[in-house]
Image (cartoon, rainbow, N blue to C red; front, side):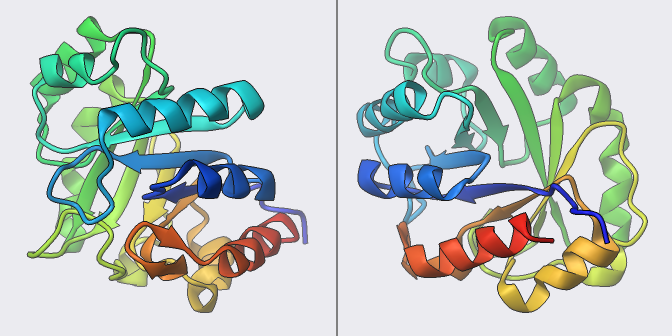
Length: 218
């Protein structure tokens, strides 16, 4: 069987030390949460420091700033000068008009849009966004949180999905589910957070290594 070359993003990092360890393990993208109510939130100053270090030592890794229903002006303010992120990930209820505006105001940074999937019908709402974003991220729906819940999207919703842009799968991704994801769902990338954590924002690096190595070898 040919290797899948599935990309992997480790999200919700909160320390420079762990970000560097994850980068060393071979992650393709590292996400930092800029949503204040999240238990994985870190300040713009700490985010800047982590991303600057990654840019210097691992320039090929996507540096993803995750925001939710945030004013575009606040996003720009949190760049603290020149942006150190390569991707803005919209993880809230942002509409197409918002995506157009952020594209216009911040044209040199990639734009990913997350969609919370509760029913199969929710997938129908994605298509209109495809012309205005660089990638799509599917996460599970949870009434308590917009991400990092560890809950899965029902697998039968995800078979034979086709988008005109690359798409990432998030929500409860663990070793137990990984082979089905690779062999049957086949996203372009997977986004992992809570399933490899000791506590919110603190990753179990051994679990992370096992998962990344499994992806590399399949």
